[in-house]
Image 1 (cartoon, one colour):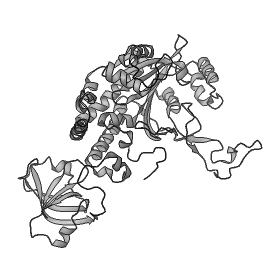
Image 2: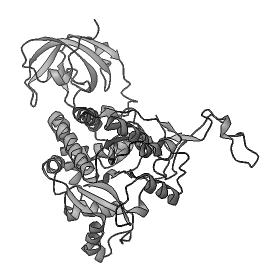
Image 3: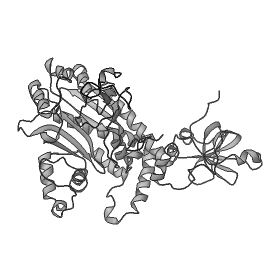
Image 4: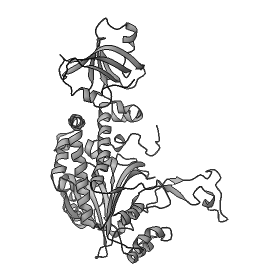
Length: 478
């Protein structure tokens, strides 16, 4: 059997007792024609492979270059070097894949994140991205474990859809019609009857509406899949393709919704802290080194792990939108005109407002509820005051909004009137309205942007560095 290897992460936990072992991986460094630092991606830590001088021919040694792939059979022995308890004394070395050291763009030195985005197909091989993507995997696993333990049904909602759940209109079209000469009706408009689906379709912006259908049958469901926004936002917080987690729960009100979201976020963080301690410690140290370049007054009060512990061990602050606006209006920041965007009741709070609330005022995550109806979607439950809806956002330090959700409007007459007022065609959403006709119940749900969650846990400053191949305006490389 070719693959009887031991992963380096497991090997490094052994007590060295002359065991025979096979390891495979990529060369990080090769020193003195004798010491190979080998890494297989299971951990940032390398295993040192020792080549006895004179045992291997020069042709082989010349091929042991940075990023060459090796298969090594050898003996596990105690290490005399610092920082490692064992090493592998090589008996056999086979080169599985050569690497031209002159052309290989990742040299053993520090590279900027901007440079690494240009070679996103290779950046997984760096320690930073090794840690980020192992943590991303752990978070994804924890998502499923959390909901499975609570008896939720995992529902796969469509990626191609005819509905716009957000009403924002920033969608990617899906069509088989020719772009240069599409069929047209007599009035000049495009004739979608000849398209594959027989109607205008787009990539989904949310699985929520379909998720509500599942919740009104199974009680509690969640979706976890890619969503798409054709929003021309070239920022460190936005992607055109990103992953969303969207639970929908029958028999839940706004408070139940907030309670679940808080428990969910704390569960995810706790899981990573228990299972990815080495990767978190690496990223903590990386951030500390980065902070040293900043002026003292711009440095964080807590390091990465302290921040995560703080979120896990403290209740989130809960305030209404009206209270949030009052806090902003009374803030020294506002009085000294330090906000770029104006503050008044009715605004859709900007990232700078959200971050002020969590980073300066409360210094912990904040759940803001009961937003003005005018800035929220048609499906949110209308409050008795006639001005606000039972919406909630969770704001996190460093990134602002991480969760958006609401209690859904379960009353058919109020939902139909709201759709009419907002110009949402009820005839196209007849299937959605049926859930209010046949056994309607109070229900609620939220969406958590997965990449923003990964950003929060890893401390990465740019959302493009927590997804394997970022899709952004003018960029669909790899």
